[in-house]
Structure formats: structure tokens, C-alpha cells
Amino acid sequence: MNPDRPQIITPMIMTALVITFGCLSAWLNPDAAVLFLAVAAGFPVVWLLVERLKFRGAVSEEAMEELSSIRNAITSAGLMLAIPLAMTAAYTSQLVQMNDDFEQRTMGVVFGLVFAAYGNLVPKRGVSLKSTSCDRASEQAFNRFAGRMFMLTAVVYAAIWAFAPIDWALYAAMAVLVCGIGLVMLRRLSASRKD
Image (cartoon, rainbow, N blue to C red; front, side):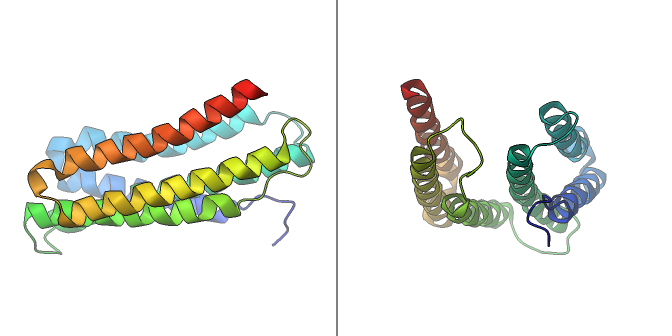
């Protein structure tokens, strides 16, 4: 693999999976078809818009690193969407027999594990050595902080879905998710104000 060319295969595979499982879920769940089709159609459109609006004309070496980072993010987002869509399709098609409570718990735990895997990758992402617009040390420190927060948030999120009473698991898990992501966003905002 050429490190100067951003990987396109994995985001394309994830996009194909999101479209496939989104359409299958829409077909199996006619009542929620609009939602599933919106996800299936929206995901590739968002990817296309991000790349087209961000990268016009010739792409510099610094922009190639950004493009690679965007495609890695698309891959991660695709994975986080494809797994719940696939599970929804499996449950709705009766391939997997279980009650609604167990289905909700399973999907919550799986999402937490996928989010934890993403959090594990964040600090390992290198900071651009070609970029002159940021302080590389503070950028890497932010990546480490974000990775730790994502991991911690994901573990607590999965634990809530695994062990909390189902009546309030959704509310508690979403509160944890919003707080964890909110802390990362606050850290980013405070860092950008210092610059």
C-alpha cells in the first residue's frame, strides 16, 4: 500500500454495508423504511460532500493526510452504523430469535464495543508532520485525551446496557455518551481558544 495515497477500499466497503443493511432493514421494517433509507442514502452523500467540499483541485501532501484521516473516520462511522443495521435486519427477519429487551441490550453492548475500538485508535493516529498550522505536541495530547475519554465512555455505555434495568438503560447510556463526547468537544474548544 502506498502511504501517500489515502485508502479508499475500506470506506467503500463500509459504505456498501451501510447501504445494503439499510435497504434490507427498510424492506423488513416498512413502518420505519423512511428512516433506514435515509441512513442508507445519506451516508454516501455525506462522504461525497465532505470530500468534494474539502478537497477541490490539486491535492497537496498535507491535504492527502487530511483525506486519509477523513476516510478513516468514514470507515469508523460506517462500522458504527453497519453493525446496528445488520443486527436490526437479523432480528426483524427472524434469523435470530430473542425478545426485545435482549435485542436492545445486545445492540447497546455492541455499539459500546465498536465505540471502544474507535477510541483505542484515536491516540494512535499520527499528527501531521507537514502541517504548519497546529502545535503538534498539543494536537497529540488532545488525541490521547480524546481516545481515553472515548474508551471510558464506551466501557461505561456498554456496562449500562449489559447490567442496568432496561427501563432506564437508554437514558443513562445516552447521558454517559453525551457527557463523554461533550468533554472531548469542550477540550477541543478550549484548545482552539488558546491558539
